[in-house]
Length: 252
Image (tube, rainbow, N blue to C red):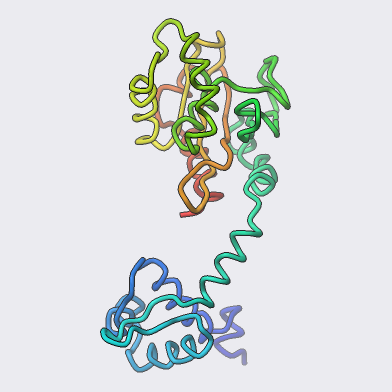
């Protein structure tokens, strides 16, 4: 007869220990033993035994006065090591075929380069969208969904020179100053994705979502393009799929 650990495919005591560490990470502050026991639905005596092991390993520290526990230098080292190894671009590129299959739309992946928002991966749908864009294309900040994704979520300093040039040449209802840019991206930040309708490239609409790092800043932007105006008119299935895809590859 299989043991409980064998039946579950894991080690129950280790699963419980990892659940405690995860609960401490979600708290974002030091926590008492009793609160941690309540969060994890464990007896305080059991939590205390785990915490004693964590203290010995340096994963947890305990405040002298309050007696509360917090993540320690060992946990910090593990976290920094994981961050250093995380490759946002390749991880996203590898997963893009699944997004295309799910939505039936062509997807592109862009990063911020010396010339601006640059397409580094192009994943075509079964019925491809006819466009002159391709690998290496630099997308404008103000009138592309990709560019607006960077405006809304990327660090702003690297964008300023290109943004200033675009603002000086803006026409129609595009923003002409910083206040206009803020008004443009505010609803997109609130919605969690950027969009453009068919005014800029006739017949094409696009939505874009950021791949966020641990600081909440865009390391890359994933864009879906299509021809149906409904794509940019509300949070339909494709937009929900895009947001879920980006969230799954982001930190936080």
